[in-house]
Length: 348
Ligand SMILES: *Cc1c(COP(=O)(O)O)cnc(C)c1O
Image (tube, rainbow, N blue to C red):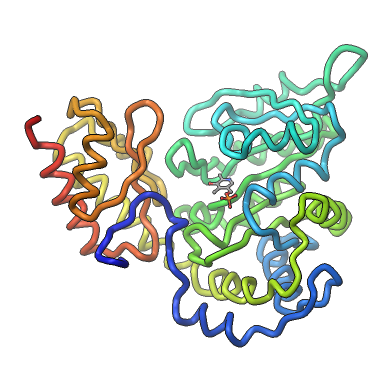
């Protein structure tokens, strides 16, 4: 908690820990465009090893990670199969179309999951008429679906279809370690289902800046070229990577606390109304509060919460997104529940 505020808008709002700030101050650096930054090189190796991939590339944002990965696996005019609610489709400014000339073909599915059968039926080889399907994209955990975990069996089936049909696979794993901690399945198991995987240091892992792309050496070489093209070639960025390293080394196991806090929050909300939350959908660190049983506009609820020091984010469809992270502890959750109880019960 900072400034007396409880910030439930996102897990991107955490401030660097004292250990991160020390690591940043002491980081050995070099010019990373020349490949000379030892802190970045070592972070890339550690991340790739953790995901069972040959190589990694440190990028400023998860969005740039998705872009360079998709760009490296495709040619302009190719098609990407993705879920209707995919992050890179809805929240990255149309970047795959603008930068790489890609066509997004959307598949629907419960909880942000696409199914191997649908993928198999949708893949097309490209001819005089159709775009060629080049990549199938999965998202784990799924942001817009409320932090849902992409089922590993479905990922394996999709991977099999992709290999058989010679189509690439990408995992937007911005929060892949939340999935690892929640299931006990190593992130590398999901990573083995895809050619490229991205993850964010700047979400629940708690670093101030940065994401990682992991893949084969060849794909990372191409991704590195594309990163430069997008203006993401950074110089002595080891000062940032040093904090990301602390996040990777010390931030994974503690995600379990965020999951427990999200669960406690969801259970508390259920006490207010049986339809306030779908408890089964709370798998990691996000809670989508269904406001419809309370018949109050979302802005009124969020304004009421803000005046009590609780920051929240509205989401489409009248839900309110509540995200737990390192800077929110168990006491904060109780305080937030108290405020929610008051604001949701208030008469107009
Ligand atoms: C946050 C996020 C990203 C990337 O976000 P940046 O803000 O660009 O770092 C990508 N995919 C998903 C699923 C995300 O939640």
